[in-house]
Image (cartoon, rainbow, N blue to C red; front, side, top):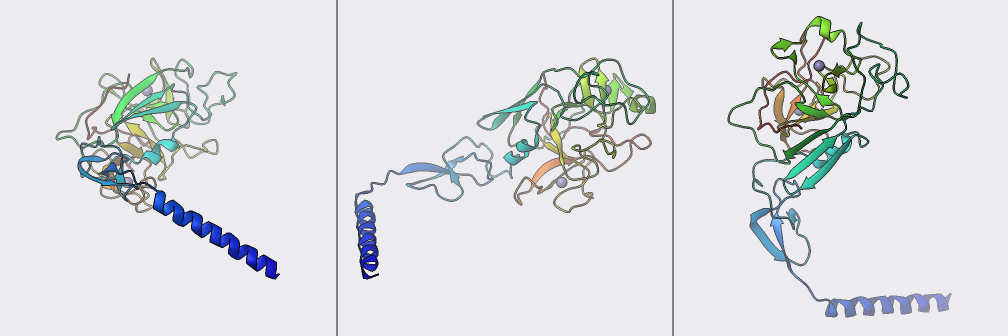
Length: 293
Ligand SMILES: [Zn+2]
Ligand SMILES: [Zn+2]
């Protein structure tokens, strides 16, 4: 027993002498750190300090041109996208998003032989064509800003959903708004096939087959062409339908991704469009639109 005590004391002595020795010899190499006030991982080139260790709220990057302008897109939101379809390439203050457009849910629009093919559970017809891989690419700011004037959306992809399939607006052709007959061709996911491939127009249906898509909840739905995220009808900040949305469904609040930080994002607006259908996005983009190729 006595031998053990002595051994421990000896061991402690060795540890102390090693650490004090290390303290004496450690050389501190100071590097420059830039303030990241909006916590987007990008630092403010105008506010910096030198230190050996990374100070709280400081980063090595110095490319944030708008560090004080509120939080940018919370990066954890990108984890909610279907990794089989969507890839992200980060470059400074921008992200390039590429999708093959292939959703990770069942649909009658898959080829009959595809594992995700199911019989139609809502609607009364299918539009021509089946789900095929496509290519959707867009480069978006990680700190998108509200524009001085809003922009109407056009035909084609106006956003990329978390499943990988593109989000379309409330039109089915030039000056041809969605109607009941068109809506009866949507699958439970709110999508159908068109000349440019499979895409969504409306919120998904509350059917047992629907296991992953947002239905009257606060799930992330996707990201729009102006770089702002779009969530389901409810907001995580209040756990209910927000009452302070602008005409595009946007407002500034925290979400499940933002760790309490407030940032501008859209919601699916909680109102019927035609009969029982709820549009994903029928308003103007409130930021600066980028082209989805
Ligand atoms: Zn369509
Ligand atoms: Zn919200």
